[in-house]
Length: 223
Image 1 (cartoon, rainbow, N blue to C red):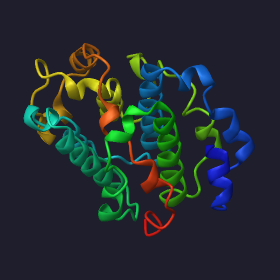
Image 2: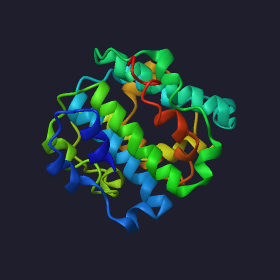
Image 3: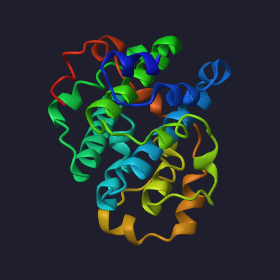
């Protein structure tokens, strides 16, 4: 699916390499693995492709508990996080347009649509934000769902790796605390790894998108 999308928009990504990166059907049919795969995709894109992430912005991922307990507010929060991350690495992403990409949480109850939405999100990001994506990096981003659970994972940006080790940490109200940009940068690495690995798997279902919006080429054409 992703290969076809990239071909249709005349991307210069090597589709033969990309076709090797898509996970098999078992992965796509397993919700937990799919969530882990999305975490891995986002981390690889931000770490290996964009490379210049501002750690201060990552503090926005760890919002207060009131936000995390409200699905609509959580979606808005993660829209802001993604927008800020992409803008801080000097991309030309339009925040208002990006906000239209994450609107409808009802679609998340349909696994088939969830998979399609994931593919569409990634294709739009890769095409419109970084048209010259390294195909060698792309061959890695959809393969290993365990990489972020390994504290020895070799990421170029330590803070980014730690925040994404368990992005589902957003739903733990007992351990999660407000984190300022300053404290996030100064936090002890081992402690944060241990903290993030305590969380259970229940979050990215609130941040994926309405397939109808994503399949409308005009919606994202201004990015």
